[in-house]
Length: 145
Image 1: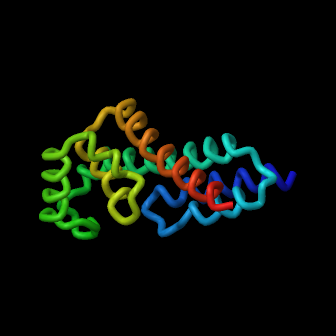
Image 2: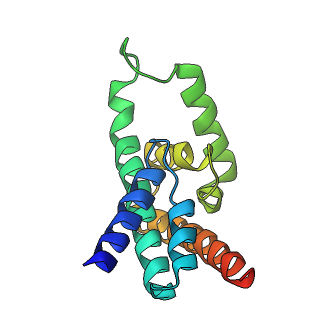
């Protein structure tokens, strides 16, 4: 039961970290790796799935964000939104390979939704980026043992 709780906690941590919430999943992944009682491939799969799903929520929010533009309570100024859209239009979908980065990665997935990136390309590119990040983190953690 404790194993299931650890995997669930990692999933929720990774999910929350991919949304605009200020959470971290890397510390929990490292702790579970150092514990040694968990399967590496399952930890990577759970963390990646949670993180990609959280990014997909950002993408969905971005898809519906445009209709609220211009309202007083809208959290992003027109200038900032146009700047983000210009950046995405300039660098394209491959900029989603940077979705694993702190601070810029989460808003980038939101902008991809605003820019109407197709869902399957979004999930493929973001999935590659997030898997790569967790795999490198696991490799570095385990190689230091």
